[in-house]
Image (cartoon, rainbow, N blue to C red; front, side):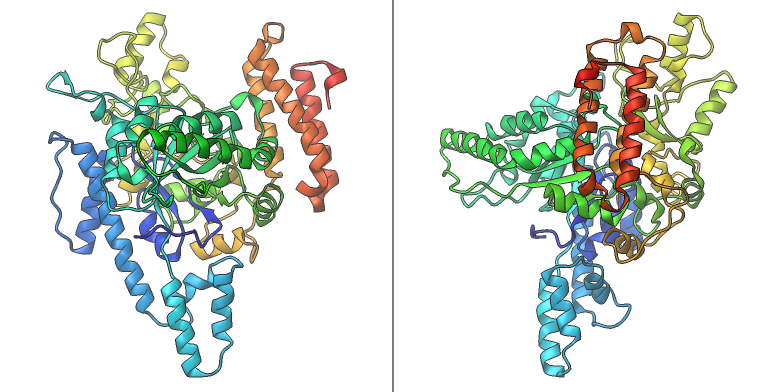
Amino acid sequence: MPSNAPVHSFHIPVMGTGFTIDTPLKVAKFGISSVVSLVDDTLIEQMRRKISEGLGRAYQAIDERSEDSRARRITAYLNLMHERVEEQMAILRASVFEKGSELSEYFEMLPTSPLRSAYEAMLSVGDPDTRARLQDELRRLVVPGNIDVNIMTKLDRERFRAGQQLGPRFSDAMTALRGFAESKLSSSVVLSAGINAKLYAYLAEFADFLPDDAGNLKKKIVLKVSDFRSALVQGRMLARKGLWVSEYRIESGLNCGGHAFGAKGQLMGPLLEEFRSGRDALVEQLHAACNKAREKLGQVELSVAPPVRVTVQGGIGTSEEDAMLHDLYGVDGTGWASPFLLCPDVVSIDPDHLHRIEAAGENDVQLSNASPLGVPFWSLKTSESEETRRSRIAEGHPGSNCPKGYLVSNTEFTKKPICTASRAYQQLKLKQLGMVESDVTDKACICHDLAGGATKPSGIDPDAHTAVCCGPNTVYFERQAGLREMIDHIYGRARLPFKIERPHMFIKELSLHVQRLRGELGDKLETAGQAAAESRDNLMLGIGFYREQASRLAADKREEFLAQLESLREELDRILPGDRQNSP
């Protein structure tokens, strides 16, 4: 599947381990790129069997005890999706242009673009021969969306066999990378959750990640970042190995789904402005570093830097916000995640939890301590996973039996790492504390339960207790929607209804930071440390930036935007007073 410039201006980011596990099979044929998590190879193998059997294909199991099973499972699943999407594209190209056909839908869902204009021009032609010729040209221009993959770099559990450690190349992140690298895909790996030096070094061992003499790449690297400095540091680390970062995917620190990173109060607006103004210098620096590395490797110097995209995701909810990000900050694309949890023809989700998300209010989606990684985690309080966690506590048996173990990391009580969400850890910790319940029991079995959205409705695991990692943006959408409806909403051709008034995405992100700071400080104002002061200063700088940009950020609701901004500034000043002379 050749690598092509995207025909859509948005992508569907990874959501949990299960929600987008087979999303490419539902949207790639329409030119839409989506991201699959490579954390859970057990789920991946289960889905390969389910899909293969559904398509009438031969399936040969890859036993988890076999040599390099995790990498081989990932490769086999990605190849299956690659082959199936190619089949879907062949069927689509061979179909006719008529109302309701997938071929017509492909073009009708496109944003305003030369390709869509070519389609509309074809429709206006009356001569049958000319119309047929234009239709053949359009068929040749049809390209699939990418099957991209996500690796959380810090989820890098060491693997053991017969009590013996297998070595770093068999750790979770390394095997996930190898599984993708050895697949047939020509797409991107999205690296998230920080730096993993040995993983970055391992990338350079695969030719597909290295630019050829013309700067072309078969497999691309995407870095998910929450600040400009991180983009520069990580980009330089990779460039010094001859690798090229093809995209910087900026994500809101808090206004997102799944794990949330506060990023010291850095707000999306100022960060996007920093990328806009510093983008050319960033590319120039990395181009020079990459060429220096290529010289050492005996490779041809790249006369022109390969393309670099800057995209943004986290809390986008209206076509006006989407357009603002493109027009004001010059981003190349946007990511729409949590709203698609209400699109059952896009994600894997059981009907019960689809209705629970649909019914959720603002208080039902919380920034919780559920993740064993020790990072704040957005969680639907009404999910079966949370209900089960609470019922285990009530019954006096807190914790999970840890069926998968992808998040094992704690050695406080054991030589071999265990998970802080496990029953084993929680019982030992509670005994040490002399308590029957504490924040220890907040941890949930998310590495197993996040697969429930896929395994429960498919019959793989009908008794799964599904966890839902939707972000706060989800609760504003009033009802379920189809793919076509959501795309029309993104591009401003239609508008999905909101159940309650929805704040501007920048106001929402700011309010989440203020809430987080209030929660962290509580009544400990006098002991607030440097980190809290830095967060406050960054937030105040962001407020000043938004005030100056208000007319461009929220032209139709400027006064309301400014009033909300001032209210949050006052609240922030009450939580942690600063130097009023330097306050915006």
